[in-house]
Amino acid sequence: MLFTIQKWIFLEMLFLFDLFLLDIFFFIMQLVLAAKYIGAGIATIGLTGAGIGIAIVFAALINGTSRNPSLKSELFPFAILGFALSEATGLFCLMISFLLLYGV
Image (spheres, rainbow, N blue to C red):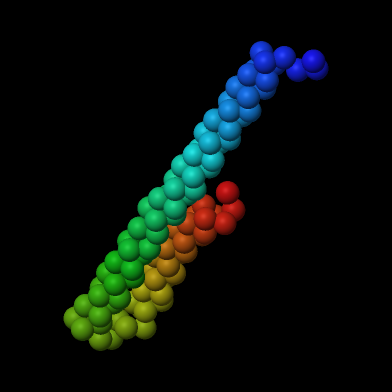
């Protein structure tokens, strides 16, 4: 007899252990995928801050222009600079979110 009962039992236990390791591997992969989605969602919270920052910049521009209309030409470039910096931080948050979703 080529295979004895003990050898068959050993091979069956080895096969079941391999299935167990495969289940653990798939569980870990699902856990990593869930962490990616959670991280991307947390990274997009920064877009809220960028929106609030842009609103504050233009509210200050409107407030300053209404107080002294002759300063509009001097205040507007600073408002555009503030808008660009606020938008850049929002785009950085969006970039990190996309990197987490599609790059890792």
